[in-house]
Length: 261
Image: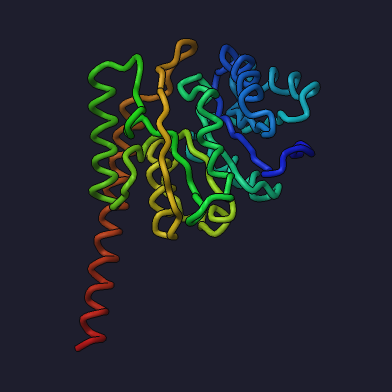
């Protein structure tokens, strides 16, 4: 599936539900800024014709493919499906981004810079397009969205011990070799908390994670998929993960104390 000129074998995944207004221009812009990638659209049976457009476009663009799913199965499962596809097809890198232009393709070169391993020091395993490092910013949000996002990221750092500033952002490039070592079946999240959980799993595995600044712009076309139910469920999963982390830490401390006694 990968283009012959793609030396790094990189797959960009786009989870979609009713994104036919955004997808044609988005695919064009992705291939303009990163012509050496392949694109996989994971479509949840969008009633607006997103999947049909992908099939027609893929007939004339060998770098584009579509994975059809039976219904709206959740952002987390769509992202996992894209990761599994990247692993199965032998891609070295998989980059996930939103399909609504919140993640602008102009930032792709900075995220894909993690593929360059010619420099000194340990290679990067995960590169995050970050809203919360110097140079990063958000456009088009009201105070409630800002508050919710900041609160989720603070909770992720406190509960999960993550060091990154943007733990909830989904604009990321991953080394697939590390993803292949994860137990995807053990991941609880099916919605927006997937981003924190996969980052937590990779951090525990010893992945080197870095952030590069992006401008996150609220969508201009189509409707947002975020709702209060998703937010509450994400908070519940983060709490459960944090409790599990605390229990493991306590057990390790107890075993260490017993062993040295």
